[in-house]
Length: 475
Image (tube, helix red, strand yellow):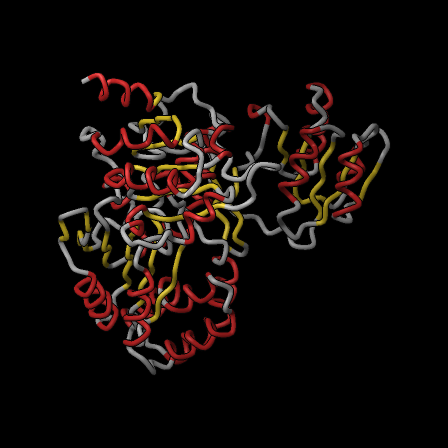
C-alpha cells in the first residue's frame, strides 16, 4: 500500500523529563550539541565519554552534569528516560542503540535517522512555551531556517506572560463563564495590555492590567505604537515592530513606507495612508493626531508607521503630545534611520578614530535664515553631517558651508533609496554637491553625508558627482 504523502511518519510529542536522566554518549561536537539542546530542559544530564573534548568538560561544570570519563558500558544507561548516541562511530552508535532498546529506552543516534526511535526537532524556547520543528531528518537546515522565522515572530516576553497566565488559570475558571467571555479574556490577555506591559518589562503593571481585565473593571483600552519602518528594506524592520504589525487593528503609514512593509501587518487590519511628500499632503498633522486619538478612544490597537526612526524628523513629538493629552496609552518603537542605511550602503564610517568623533542629523531647509545654524558650525569643526531631504537645497547647503569656512574639497556621499535594491550611490566633494539640485531623475528620498570621515567609504559601486557637474557646465 502506497504511503500517504500528506501524513507524517513521526508523531510529535512533548516528553516529561523534569528530574529524570538523559544520557548522552560521545565526546565531540555532536555530543556537545545534544547536551546544549537537553540543557534547555530541567532534565538531569549524564555525559559519557572516554576522551571528551575540553568544551564538553566545561559544559559539564557549567550545567552540573554527571560526567563519566571512561569507556562506554551498558550500565551507563541505568535510570535513563532518553539516550543519545553521539560517538561519531557507526558500530559504537549501533551498540548503544541496541543496549537502549533492550532496556526499552527511546534512543537517538546522531545523523543516523534510520536507526533512531525519535528525532530531535529544532526548538524555539519561550519556556514554558516551546515550538518544535521537525523534518523527519530530511532537511535539518530547513528546520533551522523555519526556527529562525518563528523565533522572530515570538516575543521574548512570551515565556513570562505564559507563566503569569498559568497563575490566573484557576481564577479565570472560577470567575468567568465558559465560552466567548472566557475566550475574550484570554485573547485580550495575550494580545492586549498585559502582553504589552510584559513586553517592555513592566511586570507588576502587567499583573495589575490582568487583574482589571479579570474583574472587567475597564473596557478594552486602545493603544498606539509609533513604529519606525526603517529606511525601506523590509528585512530591516525590528522584531518588535513586526510583532506589533501582526497584532494591529489599524495601520497608519507614511508615503515613504514601502508597500512590502505595510503588508507585513495583520491581513484584516485597516490600512490608512496619511503620507506627506513635498507639495502633497494627504493628511495634515492635526488630522493625523485626531485620527490616532479617535482610534485609541475606540479601543483599537494602532500602529503608526513612520519611515526610518519615528523620533528623527518624524514629528512624533506632536503625536505623542496629542496622545498624552487624550490619555491614550502609547509606545515608541525605534527604527533604522536613513543615515545609518546610507552609511551602510557606502560602507562608510560615520565616526572615524583620529578624524571625527561626532555626527549631526539635520535637514538643509534650516539654512534659509541669516544666521548659520549650529549644525553648520559643527560641520566646520569636523563633525560628520547627515542631511535629510536635501536634494532641492543642495546648492544652498554647499554654498553656505563653503562660505563659512568648510573646505570645498570635503568629501560627500549621496544615496537615493538607501537600503533598497534600486538604490543609487554618488560620491564627490562639497564643490560637486550643487549638481544634485537639478537631478530631476532622483525621485526617491535622498540622503547626503558630508565630512572628512566620508573619505573612508567604499566608492567602487558609486558614480562621481563631478561627472554630472562637468556635463552641466559644458551644456
